[in-house]
Image (cartoon, rainbow, N blue to C red; front, top):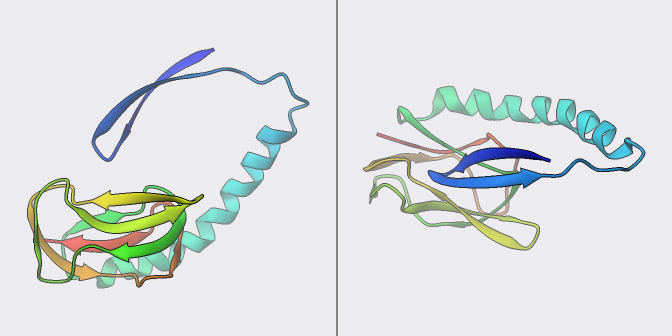
Length: 123
């Protein structure tokens, strides 16, 4: 078993991972999936340069944009939800990393996004 400390949206989690005893097919599948995600993230990088704000708000996980909680020009506090993603029937809030004003919303409800995709920008 291995212990890891993971931080997600400012929340710290201590997790323990147990090594599997399978045939090794699952790790190979995970490695194969990772390179496919990189080309899909390229369009998000192009959007990043067009964003109006200097602070990026990015997706922590792949999913579908479920709801927009903020709009351009709206003042938000650190921890306020800006976008709600849906992944595996769960709603995942993507929050403002600090106090500021939303400069742009770069996604629409229903958009599919990859982990790390630019969702919005702030000033």
